[in-house]
Length: 352
Image (cartoon, rainbow, N blue to C red; front, side, top):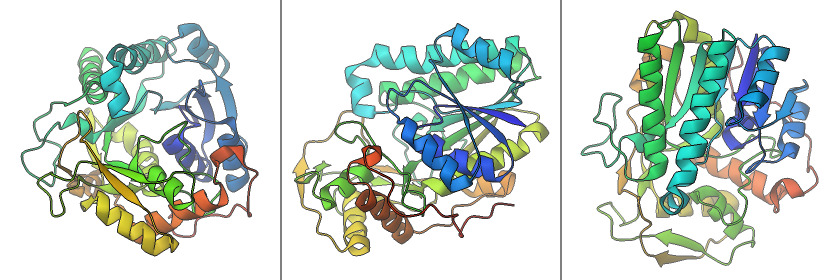
């Protein structure tokens, strides 16, 4: 089967490509490389020992997509492509709506025109807005506190409407929580451009000396230590969830909405302490004002994913931090560095 992975050179996309290749799929990555590196794909190929077809383009450009669907018989799409920084979305809402929503519309139009109607969509726990209780179940009320979250919510609703108009579509909406960690080889990981928007790369860059200190946004939330609590999930567990969804997609007779999380919540300071223990490095931090759009607590009830996909997260916070540190210490400047060490298969992943 040929799988088109939009945004496949990015953080979650590149890790998912490894498991797709190991599962025997033919992978075609489509990326505009605005926030990703071509080096990540080279390293994925080394880890998996298999080639990837890479096509540069923008999902908002129909002609770019038509060329792919004309050249390959695409069986399904895993759709990662889009902008994803909460703070930036508040500052640039139109850019987020254009990239995320308009881009998905163009993608779906191209898919339908070429007879491909199976899509796994990269959604987010931000569609739950400010949940009244935790853990969060899939049937919780939906809202959003920022343009990034609204773009994901709008796309979900659009895909549901698409299914109603044409039940031949096979659609899985994966709402995942906070991806962290890296491949166990230490050769691929999260490599944000500029100042990181996510917690783990900021902690790692501070530990390696690239940043002077970590900014902790808010210490007055209603949590056990005042800092925000999130459900941090290892990126390889998350990648496995996408492969499981792809394996099951043809059996679904409705739009499937599934949380991918661990069911455990950790605060920012919990993560700092865990990373210090895993790395043996001190992580200095300073308290900063809350960021617009952030909420106090967000963690999943992942039981539906286990029931429907046979999937559950297996990696601990210790492994998340150890793998993040291995990636960051081997690659202090991200993909700008030479490959350090030998890529190896992750022995903790069930590749069957």
